[in-house]
Length: 228
Image (cartoon, rainbow, N blue to C red; front, side, top):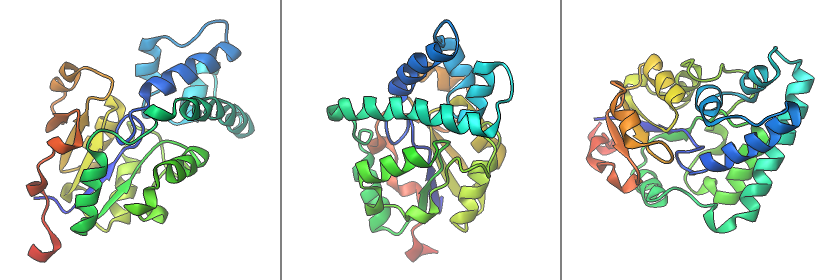
């Protein structure tokens, strides 16, 4: 029985991994002669901060001002792709129904994402996230937490929920994010196969369940407040 849940966002609540791939491919060609490969994306992009990704892309640790400038340029490319593909810019299958259940039963929940503020603000407005989440409790890449696979972001999120990590569930799609949750001592890790194959997650011991639709999550795994 678990008391709360923490969601990654990109590739989890919003199946946008392909858009990030396209945006980084497009942007990386502006920085070096050729685009990111799929293998590079999987190894150096998913679950990482823009600083981490740009450090790899540039081959050195960039100055904070350069990280901010290049990061904003790339994220602007990504958000424009989302706006142009409006019919596919929606929450993941079953997510709204699942979030409604959590809200109705007062189950503590938040988002822990390595997205930066401009993107988080875009998601809050685009998906009307205030319907379910306390916006002030969303954890994002504000410079205070290390990128995944470091456990920091999930430790911070569980602390914000006033819960022990072992009493929390984490929903994640990135291998680096799953490792972050494992390192944080999260009680149950649910892998979201939004872009990667189910087989990829079958080989990760820390993963308790693999889903493609949030309706696949058993509601009975939560310890409701009335039973505490």
